[in-house]
Amino acid sequence: MHFGPLITILVAGLGFAFIFGAVAHRLGISPLVGFLLAGVVVGPFTPGFVADQELAGQLAEIGVILLMFGVGLHFSLKDLLSVRAIAVPGAVVQIGVATLLGVGVSSWLGWDLFSGLVFGLALSVASTVVLLRALQEHRLVQTETGKIAVGWLIVEDLAMVLALVILPAIAQGLGPGISGPDGTSPSSLLLSNGIWAILALTVLKVAAFVALTLVVGRTVIPRILHWAAHTGSRELFRLAVLGTALGVAFMAASLFGVSFALGAFFAGMILSESQLSQRAAEETLPLRDAFAVLFFVSVGMLFDPRIIVSAPGPLVATLAVILVGKTLAAWTIVRAFGWPNPLALTISASLAQIGEFSFILAGLGVSLGVLPEQGRDLILAGAIFSILLNPLLFGFCVRFAQRHKANDAVMDLAVDPESPTTRTQLSDHVVLVGYGRVGAAIGSGLVGYGEKLLVIESSVAAHAQALADGAEAIFGDAANVGILEAAGLSRARCLFIATPQSSMTVRICEQARKLSPDIRIIARAHSDTDEVALQRSGATAIIVGAHEIARSMVKVHVSGDQFEVFSSAEASSPATRDE
Image 1 (cartoon, rainbow, N blue to C red):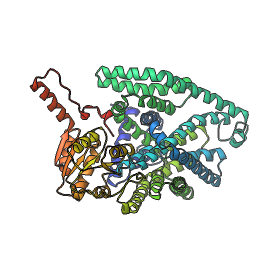
Image 2: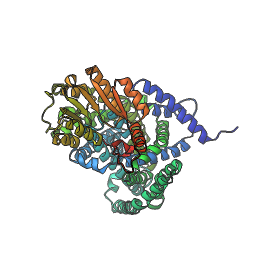
Image 3: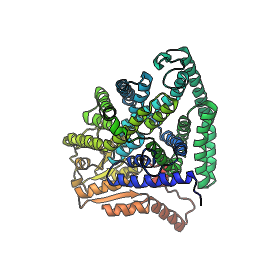
């Protein structure tokens, strides 16, 4: 039986990615390193099996589309605006510093100025996947630190999207190769009228695409998805989402000359405003993950390991830009804006790596002839080593920040300055973690029964609401022992955990049980699996939303009442649960 190259690349790519990803996970490093190494193994620069590079590149293009679609789905203008005062200038300054450092390295290597700019830009943007993974592992996503880091990353992503749009236009003006058609340098051509005319035309095309997408897309896309959702067919809804992502990306490229990446990003951004965005993200996640893996494998296939031996100096310089230059630039700007040193260290460490956009930009630069292949190899090597070293650097900075916060018993890296205290004097009280819709309802009931209530919240707005409702409140992450100690858990009578994140609830329960072995812990869960995990972690009583709804419905039936209303915060879908 004949096996075509498509089946071969899928089997080899996913198979080796699983093996090397599992090994990386076992060693405690990012699976992305394993995926990249899998690409190196099946690539043309290592002995043995060699996958079809052209076909791998096409599959990688689909991976880029789905990756950018996912970035757009999670793009929140609201979150960005909340931290714009630090995220926007910080990202711009860091991009500028990293780009200049990249130009310096390229000048040392004898490259042209424009090649250096492309090289520096590729080193300036951090990996979304790596950053979010680091924040999640240290439970920092919902903290002020996490929001600033994610906002910073969004600004970087937008800058790279703009670069992906402008780069082909400039390359078109430069003509074939790194020099212009008549042998003039790119830096000279950048000042010519022809380049600016091409850029102006490109901007007009992008503006037309954006306008059409925002005007028509906001009407058509949500209606299609709502119709698909109301059919009740999971397959139709999933196809509607994928068809939207791929269709808009293809339309952007074929009709407007805009990159697949930008088209997919805008498709995701439009969909993010829909009430179905959470479901769309969940339904397409397996396919996005699979093609994202193939994207990293295809990138690894381009990497020539011989550069480690042939160009150790440039490689060390590249890593210095990523791990030292970017980190110092980010730390300096955060400190300049008056934020504390622990927060500055954590944010700067989280950004000290490169990933998806760097690969996309490097590949585009080489294909357009504006970046030497050595530059791509240095970027790929820098990505692999920075992804490998970043968890160590990030973990060190987080531990350093935690030690410096120990005196205040606060492990969250951005304590609300208006918080009246970091330690409570209460005893025989009730501690409530989470003050969203469910938590606020619990708090109201406890206060109504005359309980002394202390609330732990990591949201500034919810923390302020708890204080306004008359409860004592501490701002921070309840999964940290320091916060639980500050809440006087060892003197408390009961702990309520009302957070919607199951993994966070389990972690809080484990920490609370260690700190106060006899305390009564009442936690909420969303499924039977969550219930089992909470039982193992030491919860005394567990309330499963679906079970309570079922009991209420049976009660209505048995009572025989003609009209009765039951209000349950648990009745909402996962997409609308409180944070």
